[in-house]
Length: 403
Length: 140
Ligand SMILES: Cc1ncc(COP(=O)(O)O)c(C=O)c1O
Image 1 (spheres, chains in turn cyan, orange):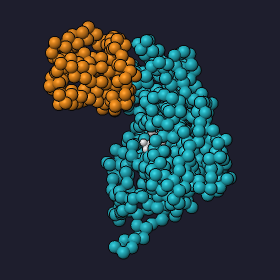
Image 2 (image 1 turned 90 degrees about the horizontal axis):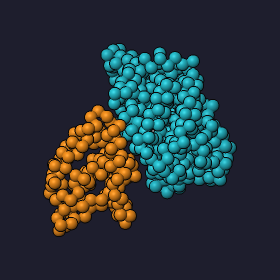
Image 3 (image 1 turned 180 degrees about the vertical axis):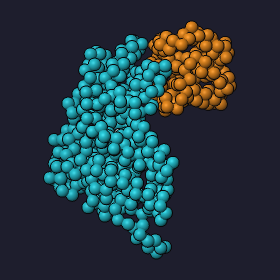
Image 4 (image 1 turned 30 degrees about the horizontal axis):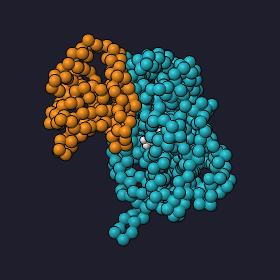
Protein backbone atom coordinates (compact mmCIF):
# COMPACT_ATOMS: atom_id res chain seq x y z
CA UNK A 1 0.00 0.00 0.00
CA UNK A 2 1.08 3.52 -0.75
CA UNK A 3 1.19 5.95 2.16
CA UNK A 4 0.22 9.12 0.32
CA UNK A 5 0.91 11.46 3.19
CA UNK A 6 4.43 10.15 3.58
CA UNK A 7 5.06 10.33 -0.16
CA UNK A 8 3.71 13.85 -0.54
CA UNK A 9 6.03 15.07 2.20
CA UNK A 10 8.94 14.08 -0.01
CA UNK A 11 7.92 16.48 -2.80
CA UNK A 12 8.57 20.03 -1.62
CA UNK A 13 6.70 21.72 -4.48
CA UNK A 14 3.42 20.06 -3.46
CA UNK A 15 3.23 22.44 -0.51
CA UNK A 16 2.72 25.29 -2.93
CA UNK A 17 -0.50 27.25 -3.23
CA UNK A 18 -1.77 28.43 -6.60
CA UNK A 19 -4.32 31.25 -6.84
CA UNK A 20 -4.93 30.94 -3.09
CA UNK A 21 -5.69 27.23 -3.40
CA UNK A 22 -3.46 24.25 -2.59
CA UNK A 23 -1.84 23.04 -5.79
CA UNK A 24 -3.42 19.98 -7.39
CA UNK A 25 -0.87 18.89 -9.94
CA UNK A 26 -2.40 16.73 -12.67
CA UNK A 27 0.02 17.56 -15.47
CA UNK A 28 2.35 14.66 -14.82
CA UNK A 29 2.29 13.52 -18.43
CA UNK A 30 4.09 16.74 -19.31
CA UNK A 31 6.57 16.42 -16.47
CA UNK A 32 6.51 15.09 -12.92
CA UNK A 33 7.62 16.89 -9.79
CA UNK A 34 10.85 15.83 -8.10
CA UNK A 35 11.27 14.17 -4.71
CA UNK A 36 13.72 15.55 -2.18
CA UNK A 37 16.14 12.63 -2.73
CA UNK A 38 16.50 13.58 -6.39
CA UNK A 39 16.92 17.27 -5.59
CA UNK A 40 19.46 16.35 -2.91
CA UNK A 41 21.41 14.16 -5.32
CA UNK A 42 21.97 17.17 -7.56
CA UNK A 43 23.00 19.40 -4.68
CA UNK A 44 25.32 16.68 -3.41
CA UNK A 45 26.79 16.21 -6.85
CA UNK A 46 27.81 19.85 -7.09
CA UNK A 47 28.77 20.18 -3.43
CA UNK A 48 30.91 17.07 -3.21
CA UNK A 49 31.33 15.13 -6.44
CA UNK A 50 31.62 17.42 -9.45
CA UNK A 51 34.37 16.75 -12.00
CA UNK A 52 34.39 15.98 -15.69
CA UNK A 53 34.13 12.31 -16.44
CA UNK A 54 36.02 9.77 -18.57
CA UNK A 55 38.95 12.18 -18.64
CA UNK A 56 41.06 13.07 -15.62
CA UNK A 57 43.29 10.74 -13.64
CA UNK A 58 42.62 12.69 -10.47
CA UNK A 59 40.52 11.21 -7.70
CA UNK A 60 37.51 13.45 -8.11
CA UNK A 61 37.24 12.72 -11.83
CA UNK A 62 37.61 9.00 -11.21
CA UNK A 63 34.86 9.10 -8.59
CA UNK A 64 32.55 11.16 -10.78
CA UNK A 65 33.12 8.69 -13.62
CA UNK A 66 32.30 5.80 -11.32
CA UNK A 67 29.16 7.56 -10.17
CA UNK A 68 28.10 8.17 -13.78
CA UNK A 69 28.74 4.57 -14.81
CA UNK A 70 27.02 3.25 -11.69
CA UNK A 71 24.04 5.35 -12.73
CA UNK A 72 24.10 3.65 -16.12
CA UNK A 73 23.97 0.30 -14.34
CA UNK A 74 21.02 1.39 -12.18
CA UNK A 75 19.08 2.68 -15.17
CA UNK A 76 19.86 -0.46 -17.18
CA UNK A 77 18.57 -2.77 -14.42
CA UNK A 78 15.47 -0.61 -14.13
CA UNK A 79 14.36 -1.74 -17.59
CA UNK A 80 16.10 -5.15 -17.52
CA UNK A 81 18.84 -4.17 -19.95
CA UNK A 82 22.63 -4.37 -19.76
CA UNK A 83 24.53 -1.17 -19.04
CA UNK A 84 26.38 -1.65 -22.34
CA UNK A 85 23.00 -1.14 -24.06
CA UNK A 86 22.19 2.23 -22.45
CA UNK A 87 22.99 5.50 -24.21
CA UNK A 88 22.30 8.63 -22.18
CA UNK A 89 20.46 11.30 -24.15
CA UNK A 90 18.73 14.60 -23.47
CA UNK A 91 15.32 12.90 -23.57
CA UNK A 92 12.90 10.90 -25.69
CA UNK A 93 12.99 13.29 -28.64
CA UNK A 94 16.77 13.27 -28.64
CA UNK A 95 16.87 9.45 -28.59
CA UNK A 96 14.44 9.09 -31.49
CA UNK A 97 16.41 11.59 -33.56
CA UNK A 98 19.60 9.72 -32.77
CA UNK A 99 18.14 6.57 -34.32
CA UNK A 100 16.53 8.39 -37.25
CA UNK A 101 19.81 10.09 -38.11
CA UNK A 102 21.97 7.10 -37.30
CA UNK A 103 20.15 4.31 -39.06
CA UNK A 104 21.48 2.96 -42.32
CA UNK A 105 18.16 2.00 -43.89
CA UNK A 106 18.32 1.85 -47.69
CA UNK A 107 16.72 4.60 -49.76
CA UNK A 108 13.05 4.01 -50.41
CA UNK A 109 12.47 2.11 -47.17
CA UNK A 110 9.12 2.12 -45.38
CA UNK A 111 8.59 3.09 -41.76
CA UNK A 112 5.43 2.36 -39.81
CA UNK A 113 4.12 4.53 -36.99
CA UNK A 114 0.70 4.69 -35.35
CA UNK A 115 -2.10 7.24 -35.48
CA UNK A 116 -1.59 8.12 -31.81
CA UNK A 117 2.11 9.02 -31.90
CA UNK A 118 3.58 12.10 -30.25
CA UNK A 119 5.03 14.50 -32.83
CA UNK A 120 8.47 13.51 -31.55
CA UNK A 121 7.86 10.01 -32.88
CA UNK A 122 6.51 11.20 -36.23
CA UNK A 123 8.61 14.13 -37.40
CA UNK A 124 12.07 12.47 -37.32
CA UNK A 125 10.66 9.64 -39.48
CA UNK A 126 8.81 12.01 -41.77
CA UNK A 127 12.04 13.89 -42.31
CA UNK A 128 13.92 10.65 -42.90
CA UNK A 129 11.36 9.68 -45.54
CA UNK A 130 11.54 13.08 -47.23
CA UNK A 131 15.30 12.86 -47.45
CA UNK A 132 15.46 9.23 -48.50
CA UNK A 133 12.46 8.77 -50.79
CA UNK A 134 10.93 6.68 -48.04
CA UNK A 135 7.33 6.12 -47.13
CA UNK A 136 5.63 6.67 -43.80
CA UNK A 137 2.75 4.31 -43.06
CA UNK A 138 0.27 4.53 -40.24
CA UNK A 139 -1.40 1.88 -38.07
CA UNK A 140 -4.98 3.11 -37.69
CA UNK A 141 -6.85 3.15 -34.39
CA UNK A 142 -10.39 2.55 -33.20
CA UNK A 143 -12.58 5.03 -31.32
CA UNK A 144 -11.77 3.35 -28.01
CA UNK A 145 -8.10 4.16 -28.59
CA UNK A 146 -7.02 0.62 -29.45
CA UNK A 147 -4.73 0.00 -32.40
CA UNK A 148 -6.09 -1.89 -35.38
CA UNK A 149 -3.32 -4.43 -35.09
CA UNK A 150 -5.09 -6.72 -37.50
CA UNK A 151 -3.93 -4.20 -40.15
CA UNK A 152 -0.29 -4.74 -39.27
CA UNK A 153 0.30 -7.62 -41.68
CA UNK A 154 -1.10 -5.69 -44.61
CA UNK A 155 1.01 -2.60 -43.82
CA UNK A 156 4.26 -4.55 -43.77
CA UNK A 157 6.00 -5.01 -47.13
CA UNK A 158 9.44 -6.18 -48.16
CA UNK A 159 10.53 -2.53 -47.85
CA UNK A 160 9.49 -2.16 -44.21
CA UNK A 161 12.53 -1.51 -42.04
CA UNK A 162 11.14 -0.08 -38.84
CA UNK A 163 8.05 0.17 -36.68
CA UNK A 164 8.14 3.14 -34.29
CA UNK A 165 5.36 3.36 -31.75
CA UNK A 166 4.38 4.48 -28.29
CA UNK A 167 4.18 2.01 -25.44
CA UNK A 168 1.58 4.25 -23.78
CA UNK A 169 -0.25 7.08 -25.54
CA UNK A 170 0.53 10.43 -23.91
CA UNK A 171 -2.90 11.77 -24.86
CA UNK A 172 -5.17 8.79 -24.25
CA UNK A 173 -3.22 6.73 -21.73
CA UNK A 174 -3.90 3.59 -23.75
CA UNK A 175 -1.32 0.84 -23.21
CA UNK A 176 -0.42 -0.71 -26.54
CA UNK A 177 0.25 -4.46 -26.88
CA UNK A 178 3.82 -3.83 -27.97
CA UNK A 179 5.10 -7.32 -27.21
CA UNK A 180 2.49 -8.88 -29.46
CA UNK A 181 3.13 -6.36 -32.23
CA UNK A 182 6.87 -7.02 -32.09
CA UNK A 183 6.24 -10.77 -32.24
CA UNK A 184 3.94 -10.46 -35.21
CA UNK A 185 6.20 -8.09 -37.12
CA UNK A 186 9.27 -10.22 -36.58
CA UNK A 187 7.35 -13.34 -37.56
CA UNK A 188 6.85 -11.77 -40.98
CA UNK A 189 10.40 -10.52 -41.30
CA UNK A 190 12.89 -10.93 -38.47
CA UNK A 191 14.94 -8.01 -39.85
CA UNK A 192 12.24 -5.44 -39.14
CA UNK A 193 13.40 -3.26 -36.25
CA UNK A 194 11.06 -1.92 -33.62
CA UNK A 195 11.49 1.30 -31.65
CA UNK A 196 9.27 1.77 -28.62
CA UNK A 197 8.61 5.24 -27.24
CA UNK A 198 8.43 4.59 -23.52
CA UNK A 199 8.11 8.23 -22.41
CA UNK A 200 4.72 7.51 -20.85
CA UNK A 201 5.21 3.89 -19.80
CA UNK A 202 8.37 3.89 -17.70
CA UNK A 203 6.90 6.40 -15.20
CA UNK A 204 3.85 4.20 -14.59
CA UNK A 205 4.70 0.51 -15.00
CA UNK A 206 7.49 -2.07 -14.93
CA UNK A 207 9.23 -2.33 -18.25
CA UNK A 208 11.36 -5.26 -19.35
CA UNK A 209 12.98 -4.57 -22.71
CA UNK A 210 14.38 -8.11 -22.93
CA UNK A 211 10.99 -9.69 -22.54
CA UNK A 212 9.42 -7.14 -24.90
CA UNK A 213 12.14 -7.91 -27.45
CA UNK A 214 12.23 -4.37 -28.87
CA UNK A 215 15.34 -3.18 -30.68
CA UNK A 216 15.27 0.41 -29.44
CA UNK A 217 13.52 1.86 -26.42
CA UNK A 218 13.50 5.55 -25.50
CA UNK A 219 12.30 7.55 -22.51
CA UNK A 220 12.75 10.85 -20.66
CA UNK A 221 13.92 11.26 -17.09
CA UNK A 222 11.80 14.33 -16.37
CA UNK A 223 8.55 12.39 -16.70
CA UNK A 224 9.66 9.89 -14.04
CA UNK A 225 10.71 12.12 -11.13
CA UNK A 226 14.20 12.80 -12.56
CA UNK A 227 15.75 16.07 -13.76
CA UNK A 228 15.04 17.56 -17.17
CA UNK A 229 17.80 16.92 -19.64
CA UNK A 230 18.18 13.25 -18.70
CA UNK A 231 17.03 10.60 -21.11
CA UNK A 232 17.70 7.05 -22.15
CA UNK A 233 18.09 5.26 -25.44
CA UNK A 234 18.28 1.49 -25.15
CA UNK A 235 19.85 -0.19 -28.16
CA UNK A 236 19.95 -3.97 -28.42
CA UNK A 237 23.56 -4.98 -28.08
CA UNK A 238 24.00 -6.54 -31.53
CA UNK A 239 22.71 -3.37 -33.24
CA UNK A 240 25.36 -0.96 -31.95
CA UNK A 241 27.62 -1.57 -34.91
CA UNK A 242 24.86 -0.85 -37.41
CA UNK A 243 24.29 2.66 -36.05
CA UNK A 244 26.04 5.71 -37.42
CA UNK A 245 26.84 8.55 -35.06
CA UNK A 246 24.76 11.63 -35.70
CA UNK A 247 27.12 13.72 -33.61
CA UNK A 248 30.70 13.16 -32.69
CA UNK A 249 33.44 14.80 -30.66
CA UNK A 250 35.24 14.49 -27.35
CA UNK A 251 34.68 11.37 -25.29
CA UNK A 252 33.87 9.05 -28.19
CA UNK A 253 37.29 7.97 -29.37
CA UNK A 254 40.23 5.63 -28.90
CA UNK A 255 42.63 7.75 -30.95
CA UNK A 256 42.42 10.75 -33.25
CA UNK A 257 44.70 11.99 -35.98
CA UNK A 258 43.84 14.26 -38.88
CA UNK A 259 43.96 11.26 -41.17
CA UNK A 260 41.89 8.78 -39.20
CA UNK A 261 39.96 8.41 -35.99
CA UNK A 262 39.30 5.23 -34.13
CA UNK A 263 36.11 5.27 -32.09
CA UNK A 264 35.27 3.35 -28.96
CA UNK A 265 32.58 0.69 -29.13
CA UNK A 266 29.29 0.83 -27.27
CA UNK A 267 27.32 3.69 -25.71
CA UNK A 268 30.19 6.15 -25.28
CA UNK A 269 30.53 6.39 -29.06
CA UNK A 270 27.14 8.15 -29.04
CA UNK A 271 27.70 10.43 -26.06
CA UNK A 272 29.84 13.13 -27.66
CA UNK A 273 30.92 16.01 -25.45
CA UNK A 274 30.48 16.42 -21.72
CA UNK A 275 27.13 14.89 -20.84
CA UNK A 276 24.54 16.26 -18.42
CA UNK A 277 26.18 14.43 -15.53
CA UNK A 278 24.04 15.73 -12.69
CA UNK A 279 20.85 14.88 -14.56
CA UNK A 280 22.06 11.30 -15.07
CA UNK A 281 22.92 11.03 -11.39
CA UNK A 282 19.44 12.37 -10.59
CA UNK A 283 17.88 9.87 -12.99
CA UNK A 284 19.54 6.95 -11.23
CA UNK A 285 18.29 8.36 -7.94
CA UNK A 286 14.76 8.58 -9.40
CA UNK A 287 14.96 4.90 -10.44
CA UNK A 288 15.96 4.04 -6.90
CA UNK A 289 13.14 6.15 -5.54
CA UNK A 290 10.65 4.25 -7.71
CA UNK A 291 12.24 0.92 -6.76
CA UNK A 292 11.99 1.78 -3.08
CA UNK A 293 8.23 2.23 -3.45
CA UNK A 294 7.93 -0.72 -5.81
CA UNK A 295 6.95 0.00 -9.40
CA UNK A 296 4.05 -2.46 -9.09
CA UNK A 297 2.72 -0.51 -6.10
CA UNK A 298 3.02 2.71 -8.07
CA UNK A 299 0.97 1.17 -10.91
CA UNK A 300 -1.62 -0.13 -8.49
CA UNK A 301 -2.02 3.22 -6.72
CA UNK A 302 -2.29 5.13 -9.98
CA UNK A 303 -4.78 2.62 -11.30
CA UNK A 304 -7.04 3.28 -8.31
CA UNK A 305 -6.82 7.01 -9.05
CA UNK A 306 -7.64 6.40 -12.70
CA UNK A 307 -10.68 4.30 -11.85
CA UNK A 308 -11.92 6.83 -9.32
CA UNK A 309 -11.50 9.70 -11.78
CA UNK A 310 -13.21 7.78 -14.59
CA UNK A 311 -16.10 6.88 -12.34
CA UNK A 312 -16.55 10.46 -11.12
CA UNK A 313 -16.22 11.96 -14.59
CA UNK A 314 -18.85 9.56 -15.91
CA UNK A 315 -21.37 11.12 -13.52
CA UNK A 316 -21.03 14.53 -15.20
CA UNK A 317 -23.26 14.42 -18.24
CA UNK A 318 -21.47 17.29 -20.04
CA UNK A 319 -18.15 15.43 -19.98
CA UNK A 320 -16.96 13.28 -22.84
CA UNK A 321 -13.97 11.03 -22.10
CA UNK A 322 -11.86 9.84 -25.03
CA UNK A 323 -10.75 6.24 -25.40
CA UNK A 324 -12.75 4.01 -23.12
CA UNK A 325 -10.07 1.41 -23.37
CA UNK A 326 -9.78 -1.15 -20.61
CA UNK A 327 -6.00 -1.14 -20.41
CA UNK A 328 -4.82 2.35 -19.55
CA UNK A 329 -2.09 4.11 -17.64
CA UNK A 330 -3.08 6.99 -15.37
CA UNK A 331 -4.00 9.46 -18.10
CA UNK A 332 -7.47 10.76 -18.97
CA UNK A 333 -8.35 13.00 -21.90
CA UNK A 334 -11.76 14.62 -22.00
CA UNK A 335 -13.77 17.56 -23.20
CA UNK A 336 -16.75 19.39 -21.83
CA UNK A 337 -19.35 19.26 -24.57
CA UNK A 338 -19.63 22.56 -26.40
CA UNK A 339 -16.70 24.11 -24.53
CA UNK A 340 -13.18 24.77 -25.67
CA UNK A 341 -10.46 22.94 -23.68
CA UNK A 342 -8.65 26.26 -23.27
CA UNK A 343 -11.60 27.69 -21.33
CA UNK A 344 -11.88 24.61 -19.14
CA UNK A 345 -8.13 24.59 -18.42
CA UNK A 346 -8.05 28.32 -17.69
CA UNK A 347 -10.81 28.08 -15.11
CA UNK A 348 -9.45 24.87 -13.53
CA UNK A 349 -6.16 26.70 -13.05
CA UNK A 350 -8.06 29.38 -11.15
CA UNK A 351 -9.18 26.65 -8.78
CA UNK A 352 -5.55 25.60 -8.29
CA UNK A 353 -5.68 22.60 -10.61
CA UNK A 354 -2.95 22.09 -13.17
CA UNK A 355 -4.09 20.14 -16.23
CA UNK A 356 -2.88 20.23 -19.78
CA UNK A 357 -5.05 21.52 -22.60
CA UNK A 358 -4.56 21.46 -26.34
CA UNK A 359 -3.39 18.89 -28.84
CA UNK A 360 -0.65 17.41 -26.61
CA UNK A 361 1.72 17.22 -29.59
CA UNK A 362 -0.56 14.64 -31.19
CA UNK A 363 -2.33 16.57 -33.95
CA UNK A 364 -2.93 13.52 -36.19
CA UNK A 365 -4.73 11.91 -33.25
CA UNK A 366 -6.82 15.07 -32.76
CA UNK A 367 -7.73 14.96 -36.46
CA UNK A 368 -8.84 11.36 -36.04
CA UNK A 369 -11.29 12.42 -33.32
CA UNK A 370 -12.17 15.56 -35.27
CA UNK A 371 -11.30 17.90 -32.40
CA UNK A 372 -8.93 20.80 -31.74
CA UNK A 373 -7.73 19.50 -28.43
CA UNK A 374 -8.64 17.95 -25.10
CA UNK A 375 -8.22 18.56 -21.40
CA UNK A 376 -5.80 16.00 -20.02
CA UNK A 377 -5.42 14.97 -16.41
CA UNK A 378 -2.47 12.67 -15.77
CA UNK A 379 -1.61 11.24 -12.37
CA UNK A 380 1.53 10.33 -10.49
CA UNK A 381 2.42 8.52 -7.30
CA UNK A 382 1.84 11.57 -5.08
CA UNK A 383 -1.70 12.24 -6.26
CA UNK A 384 -4.64 11.25 -4.08
CA UNK A 385 -8.32 10.42 -4.31
CA UNK A 386 -9.05 13.58 -2.33
CA UNK A 387 -7.35 15.62 -5.04
CA UNK A 388 -9.55 13.98 -7.66
CA UNK A 389 -12.59 14.96 -5.61
CA UNK A 390 -11.34 18.56 -5.48
CA UNK A 391 -10.80 18.43 -9.24
CA UNK A 392 -14.30 17.07 -9.86
CA UNK A 393 -15.85 19.80 -7.71
CA UNK A 394 -13.82 22.45 -9.54
CA UNK A 395 -14.82 20.97 -12.88
CA UNK A 396 -18.49 21.17 -11.94
CA UNK A 397 -18.07 24.83 -10.98
CA UNK A 398 -16.18 25.45 -14.20
CA UNK A 399 -19.00 23.98 -16.26
CA UNK A 400 -21.49 26.16 -14.40
CA UNK A 401 -19.42 29.27 -15.02
CA UNK A 402 -19.15 28.51 -18.72
CA UNK A 403 -22.86 27.95 -19.17
CA UNK B 1 -14.12 58.62 -26.34
CA UNK B 2 -10.38 58.21 -26.45
CA UNK B 3 -8.67 54.86 -25.92
CA UNK B 4 -7.54 55.97 -22.49
CA UNK B 5 -11.06 57.00 -21.48
CA UNK B 6 -12.52 53.66 -22.53
CA UNK B 7 -9.76 51.85 -20.66
CA UNK B 8 -10.61 53.80 -17.51
CA UNK B 9 -14.27 52.99 -17.96
CA UNK B 10 -13.52 49.26 -18.17
CA UNK B 11 -11.26 49.44 -15.12
CA UNK B 12 -14.04 51.00 -13.05
CA UNK B 13 -16.54 48.43 -14.32
CA UNK B 14 -14.26 45.63 -13.18
CA UNK B 15 -13.58 47.26 -9.79
CA UNK B 16 -16.80 45.91 -8.29
CA UNK B 17 -15.43 42.36 -8.54
CA UNK B 18 -12.45 43.04 -6.28
CA UNK B 19 -10.93 39.67 -5.39
CA UNK B 20 -13.92 37.76 -6.74
CA UNK B 21 -12.31 36.10 -9.72
CA UNK B 22 -15.35 33.97 -10.43
CA UNK B 23 -17.46 37.10 -10.86
CA UNK B 24 -14.81 38.59 -13.07
CA UNK B 25 -14.62 35.56 -15.33
CA UNK B 26 -18.38 35.28 -15.43
CA UNK B 27 -18.45 38.85 -16.69
CA UNK B 28 -15.74 38.10 -19.23
CA UNK B 29 -17.69 35.07 -20.45
CA UNK B 30 -20.83 37.20 -20.79
CA UNK B 31 -18.87 39.75 -22.80
CA UNK B 32 -17.71 36.93 -25.02
CA UNK B 33 -21.23 35.69 -25.54
CA UNK B 34 -22.51 39.13 -26.48
CA UNK B 35 -19.76 39.85 -29.02
CA UNK B 36 -21.42 40.13 -32.43
CA UNK B 37 -20.48 37.29 -34.71
CA UNK B 38 -17.90 37.94 -37.39
CA UNK B 39 -19.21 37.89 -40.94
CA UNK B 40 -18.95 34.33 -42.26
CA UNK B 41 -17.03 35.55 -45.31
CA UNK B 42 -14.35 37.00 -43.02
CA UNK B 43 -13.77 33.75 -41.17
CA UNK B 44 -10.85 32.99 -43.44
CA UNK B 45 -7.55 31.23 -43.00
CA UNK B 46 -5.85 34.59 -43.60
CA UNK B 47 -7.73 36.20 -40.72
CA UNK B 48 -6.74 33.56 -38.17
CA UNK B 49 -4.29 34.82 -35.60
CA UNK B 50 -1.47 32.32 -35.26
CA UNK B 51 -0.03 31.45 -31.90
CA UNK B 52 -3.25 31.02 -29.93
CA UNK B 53 -4.35 27.73 -28.35
CA UNK B 54 -7.83 28.83 -29.21
CA UNK B 55 -8.52 30.16 -32.70
CA UNK B 56 -9.12 33.87 -33.14
CA UNK B 57 -10.35 35.44 -36.36
CA UNK B 58 -9.80 39.17 -36.77
CA UNK B 59 -11.04 41.33 -39.61
CA UNK B 60 -9.96 44.96 -39.87
CA UNK B 61 -11.25 47.66 -42.22
CA UNK B 62 -10.65 51.41 -42.43
CA UNK B 63 -13.67 53.70 -42.50
CA UNK B 64 -13.47 57.50 -42.35
CA UNK B 65 -9.95 57.30 -41.01
CA UNK B 66 -10.89 54.91 -38.20
CA UNK B 67 -10.20 51.19 -37.91
CA UNK B 68 -13.24 48.97 -37.48
CA UNK B 69 -12.49 45.54 -36.06
CA UNK B 70 -14.71 42.50 -36.00
CA UNK B 71 -13.52 39.26 -34.45
CA UNK B 72 -14.46 35.87 -33.15
CA UNK B 73 -12.93 32.98 -31.23
CA UNK B 74 -13.85 29.38 -30.58
CA UNK B 75 -12.99 29.75 -26.89
CA UNK B 76 -15.35 31.86 -24.84
CA UNK B 77 -12.81 33.39 -22.42
CA UNK B 78 -10.64 34.38 -25.34
CA UNK B 79 -13.73 35.82 -26.98
CA UNK B 80 -14.41 37.88 -23.87
CA UNK B 81 -10.95 39.34 -24.11
CA UNK B 82 -11.44 39.95 -27.82
CA UNK B 83 -14.62 41.85 -26.94
CA UNK B 84 -12.70 44.06 -24.52
CA UNK B 85 -9.96 44.75 -27.04
CA UNK B 86 -12.51 45.67 -29.68
CA UNK B 87 -14.31 47.97 -27.31
CA UNK B 88 -11.03 49.78 -26.61
CA UNK B 89 -9.47 49.87 -30.06
CA UNK B 90 -12.26 49.76 -32.62
CA UNK B 91 -13.33 53.05 -34.19
CA UNK B 92 -10.04 54.70 -33.23
CA UNK B 93 -7.41 56.28 -35.47
CA UNK B 94 -4.55 54.02 -36.59
CA UNK B 95 -1.90 56.23 -34.99
CA UNK B 96 -3.71 56.09 -31.64
CA UNK B 97 -4.08 52.31 -31.89
CA UNK B 98 -0.41 51.87 -32.71
CA UNK B 99 0.73 53.72 -29.61
CA UNK B 100 -1.90 52.42 -27.16
CA UNK B 101 -0.28 50.92 -24.06
CA UNK B 102 -3.36 49.05 -22.85
CA UNK B 103 -2.50 49.23 -19.17
CA UNK B 104 -6.09 48.28 -18.31
CA UNK B 105 -5.38 44.58 -18.85
CA UNK B 106 -3.06 44.63 -15.88
CA UNK B 107 -5.41 46.81 -13.81
CA UNK B 108 -8.40 44.52 -14.22
CA UNK B 109 -6.30 41.53 -13.17
CA UNK B 110 -6.04 39.69 -16.47
CA UNK B 111 -2.30 40.10 -16.72
CA UNK B 112 -1.80 36.33 -16.69
CA UNK B 113 -3.20 36.25 -20.21
CA UNK B 114 -0.23 38.28 -21.38
CA UNK B 115 2.24 35.58 -20.34
CA UNK B 116 4.01 33.49 -22.98
CA UNK B 117 2.59 30.23 -21.59
CA UNK B 118 -0.86 31.22 -22.77
CA UNK B 119 0.60 30.46 -26.18
CA UNK B 120 0.65 34.24 -26.61
CA UNK B 121 -3.08 34.44 -27.30
CA UNK B 122 -3.75 37.96 -26.13
CA UNK B 123 -0.29 39.21 -27.07
CA UNK B 124 -0.65 37.93 -30.63
CA UNK B 125 -4.10 39.48 -30.82
CA UNK B 126 -2.85 42.92 -29.74
CA UNK B 127 0.11 42.73 -32.12
CA UNK B 128 -2.16 41.80 -34.98
CA UNK B 129 -4.61 44.61 -34.23
CA UNK B 130 -1.80 47.15 -34.20
CA UNK B 131 -0.20 45.73 -37.32
CA UNK B 132 -3.50 45.78 -39.22
CA UNK B 133 -4.05 49.41 -38.19
CA UNK B 134 -0.65 50.46 -39.46
CA UNK B 135 -1.06 48.55 -42.72
CA UNK B 136 -4.49 50.05 -43.34
CA UNK B 137 -3.29 53.60 -42.72
CA UNK B 138 -0.38 53.14 -45.11
CA UNK B 139 -2.59 51.81 -47.88
CA UNK B 140 -4.60 55.01 -48.00
C1 LIG C 1 4.82 9.66 -25.84
C2 LIG C 1 5.82 10.77 -25.83
N1 LIG C 1 6.83 10.75 -26.70
C3 LIG C 1 7.76 11.71 -26.71
C4 LIG C 1 7.72 12.78 -25.85
C5 LIG C 1 8.77 13.83 -25.91
O1 LIG C 1 9.53 13.81 -24.75
P1 LIG C 1 10.67 14.88 -24.49
O2 LIG C 1 10.05 16.22 -24.70
O3 LIG C 1 11.09 14.65 -23.07
O4 LIG C 1 11.78 14.61 -25.46
C6 LIG C 1 6.67 12.85 -24.93
C7 LIG C 1 6.56 13.99 -24.00
O5 LIG C 1 5.78 14.90 -24.12
C8 LIG C 1 5.70 11.83 -24.93
O6 LIG C 1 4.68 11.87 -24.07
